[in-house]
Length: 439
Image 1 (tube, rainbow, N blue to C red):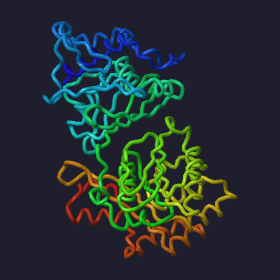
Image 2 (image 1 turned 90 degrees about the horizontal axis):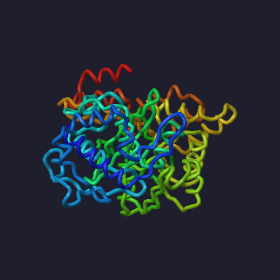
Image 3 (image 1 turned 90 degrees about the vertical axis):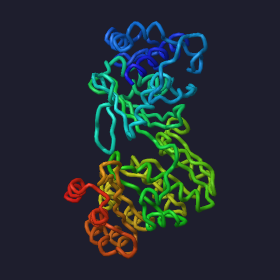
Image 4 (image 1 turned 45 degrees about the vertical axis):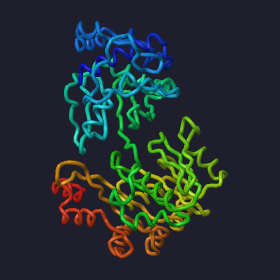
């Protein structure tokens, strides 16, 4: 695997040299021109020279302008896993995936959900929630990581990385797998996290989402929030709920995402997906304009700031169905987060708006399966019945948890109850489940 990837990396880099692919502008304090292999320092070149060996260098191949093997220029390296090597197509707005395609293929083959690239470490993958080094790959020098990340990001995102210290992008590989990339600076050096995105959108039932949850998005209007920590599967749950709307409702759906992760087809609904940075400058701007674009359903990838929350509440309060995600741990905490985002003198009005507009909140985690393979979704569900609306309006948010315990007949459930049900069915690792219950 190491030799295959290293050989492909050098071949693709030679092609980039010949093409003089534009990349990010050099920054006075960080970054640089990563358009060619010669920009790697001695450590980076030594790493690949050691991996390749003289014989591999002599059989190095050339690639045409689309990153595919050109005839008469040597033999291509054997593909990862022994399968036929995919045809690589360079995306005009993205990076040259030929540099990193074999590595990404190997990550998918392990069943990993994430890949981490960091200087002086081998590629690290997350499998079933646990981190482990990718077998057969040595630690990567900082220049190699920098070169890989910049190339796959493309010029615009690499420029954003140098100017702001962080950048996000999404790429489609030739093998049909989509990745979300979050690149960042760590102690002055580039690192990145890659999230594997399934090629198909999972159905709500396949994720284990209850009928009470899908009922929330079958209502004609209101606010539905999916919450949880990073890596808890919020984006996948949100995509499954949008897919449910798309399959069951004749509606105009507008999503605002950063970046677009799952691509929806037009089914019963017309779905327009807008990406922050590519299609619109910000969540706030997209939401403001969306209200003039005849939407029935608005989907916000993440409610990040006060103004986005204000527009989402306004839209839900004026006859639209609004779906979004928030980085909070539970349903009461989500209500606190929304209300506390506003100035103190505005909070009574915000509580009144939220009490009227809220359909429900789904807070979730992923627990290790009892079989040791895969993870299982566990959810806390708040259904905004009259009792919950009154508590929100009166500012008695600390009593919401008790109201959820007493509303099981409506489909509401606490995290503790959901954990107990999964333990009784023998679906989750008991030690991990008990740890979540205590927190």
